[in-house]
Each structure stands twice: as structure tokens, then as C-alpha cells.
Amino acid sequence: MGRLEGKNALITGAAGGIGLETSILFAKEGASVLMADISEEALSRALAKVKQLVPTAPRVETILCDVSKESQVQAAVEHLDSWGGLDVIFNNAGIMHARDDDAINTPEEIWDLTQNINVKGVWFGCKHAVLALRRHKKTKGSIINTASVVALVGSATPQLAYTASKGAVLALTRELAIVHAREGYRFNSLCPAPLNTPLLQDWLGDDKAKRLRREVHFPTGRFGEAVEQAWAVVFLASDESSFMNGHDLAVDGGMTKAYVTPEGPAAPAPVNNALKESLE
Image (cartoon, rainbow, N blue to C red; front, side, top):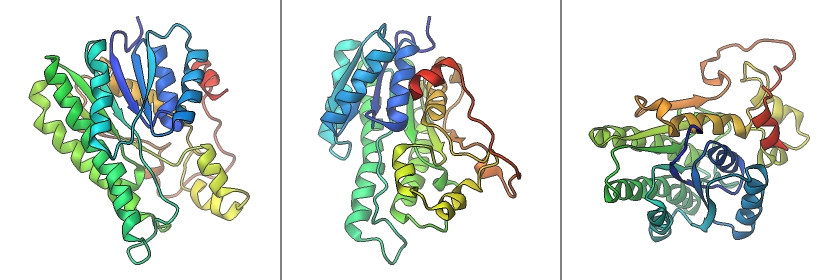
């Protein structure tokens, strides 16, 4: 049996990055997966990749969802009612807008847009997950919310709306973890470090100084991979983490614990069969 055998999972922001890698691993571990995202075209490509890599997956479907709209989040959660009800939700969808800056230069509309997606979207996911778990009389459930290491440490390259939104996700997650603990519903946050994604690499481009300013903070000397975050989500979704609740899980290569980092070449990324397959 897989680690998530028999579980029904909803993943938002599933068309790329951490969401896509998590969808692949969830399917490999035996979960039925509903992949939600705002882009129909990107979702179609992502679904094809999951089915290619995991042809024996129990069930993998997609649904369009703008997480800033409660009705759409509710519809995504209720889509799982016919599967036997939701067991796991990974509230992963989020944005970091190019015009996000400091307190002086961040436009109000960018602040509002960021909070609507990154905070309200997580709230809506948590709310309707709890309602679904109760509706199906579930005695356990795992709710996982994507925050960020910027909710734990400060940054001199400001992205204030994003940072504030991720701090809110941590506070929201902790409170719900306590409120619903006696029902058996666990709430935990994932705090990723900057990752080796096409989005980040395109943004850094050939600017070596810009790249080094970030890489220098990693004791490993390298950015993380999205699949390394996805493995942590599998753990939080599984019964292996049954006594883990209200936790902020930083998957950051030691970045938030470092004062001075080592010299020398970067450590290689760990390679195993699942990692190879999901990166290809």
C-alpha cells in the first residue's frame, strides 16, 4: 500500500511547481487527486504529465479554481463528495506580484490582490475542508497551507504584501490547529525556501550578483527543488505525521538556521528514482 492509499486530496496551484510535484507524488502514493488551478491550459498539461508518470493512479482529475472566490473553492471541495469526501487539502495557490515592494512603493491594489489570493484563498480552503470533513463524519483530516521562509526571516529585497500574507498564513494555521484539534483535524504550514523553478530562474536571468545574493544564504550552496517540498507535503498528508499539528515546517536547506555559510562548491541535489522521474 502507498502512504496515502485510500485518501482523497485537493491540491490548489496544481498546474506547476510545488503543486504539480505534489500531485505526482500523491498519485504515486495511492491518493485520488483533484488538481485545481486558475489556468485551463496549464492544468491540461499538468494532468497529462501526472498520467504519464503515474499511469496506475487511482483517480486524477482537474478543476478550474480561482481561490480568491469562495464559491469556486467550495465547488472544488464539494467535487470530492462523490469520491467519499475530502481527506487532505493542500492550500498551495499563491502569487508574488512583480509590483510588490516596500511600504512606500507597494500599490494598494497589489496589496489587496495578494491578500485575496494568499490569505483569503487559504481561509476559504480551510473553511470548506472542515465543513467537508464534518459532512462526511471524518475523524481525521490533514490541512496543509503553503507559507514561506519570508514569514520567518526578514529580507532586504522587499515584497511586503507577499511577506505579510505568508505571516498571516502561519497565524491562521496555528489557530485553526488548536480550534479543531479535538475533532482530529490537523493544520500545518509548509515554509519553502527559494526554489529552482523556471519562474525564479527566468527572473534571475544572467545577473550573477542577484543570484549570488540569494544562494549565499544556503548552507548547501544551492536552491531547493520543488519535488523536495512535495516530499514534505506527502509526510504531512500521511498518517506518519499524526501527532504533528500547528507546526511551521521550514524546508529550506538550513537557510533559516545559518549565520555564516560554508565555502566551497555547492552540495549536489539528492537523486532517487522518484526525483529523477518528476524532474524529467
